[in-house]
Image (cartoon, rainbow, N blue to C red):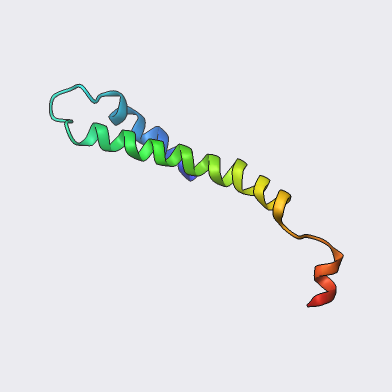
Length: 65
């Protein structure tokens, strides 16, 4: 939810990159949006997949503790 609200707030800056006075803010907004998208995909899709594939979940770990 936080990433979505931040992305919506940065969207006007990212879309107006060609306007005068936004030579720095526009490209920076694009970089921040790219980071938000990649980190959200990493946290929601890739890391859980890797944890389920390579993690050790089960009763044998509970007995060792």
